Image (cartoon, rainbow, N blue to C red):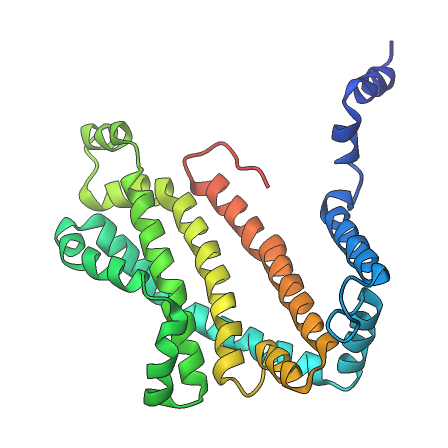
Length: 276
C-alpha cells in the first residue's frame, strides 16, 4: 500500500467537519459569509424600515463612493495614525512600569492600589476633563489611548511575572544566577506570553477608546465619520464605519499581533508552541 493511499484513507476517516476546516479560506471567510447572508435575509424580510436598516449592497455602494471621493481613505489614515501614536506612548510607559511593579515588591505595595483605582475608571470618563485641559485636540485623543493601553498591559505583565513557576526560579538560583541573569533568562522569557497578551488586549481597548474619542471630540477619523453620518441620518455610512472598524482590527490582529505573539513566545517563551 502506497503512502498516497494511506493518506487518502486517513483523510476519509476524519470527520467531515474536520475536513472542512482545511479548505483554504473557509475558516477565515466562512463566518463572514454566513453573517452577510443573514443580514441580507433580514433586509429582504423587511424586519426593519429601510431608512433604519440597509443591506450589504447599499453599504458596499456607499463604501465605494466614499473611497472614490477620498473621504474614507483620509479618515482611515487619521484613525490609524492616532492609534499608532497613542499605542507607542502606551507601550513605552506600560512595559517598563509593568516589570518595575512586578519585580519590586516595594514599588508594588506603593503603586498597586493606585493602579487598581485608575484601571476601574473608564477611558471615556476622562474625556470631559481632557477637553477642559487640552480642548478638542489630538492631545486629548492620544491621552485617552495611552491611558487605555497602559493599565491592562501593566496588570497583565504583573500577573505573568507572578505566574512564573517557583521551581524554575529556585533552579536558576541554585545554579548561581545573579539577580539580572535571573530576570533576563528566567523572568523575561517566562512572562512573554503575558506581555504579548497584554499588548493585544491593550491595543484592542485602545482602538475602541480611539473611536469613542473621535465620536465625542474628533474632527476627523472613522468614529467622527460615523457620528457625522448619524446627524445626517445616513445609516449606510454608519454601517460602512462599523465594517471598516471590524476589518481594520481583524487585519491588524491576524497579520501583525497574532504572528508576532506566536513567533516571540515560541522563540523565547517557556512553551513548546501556541495555537492560532
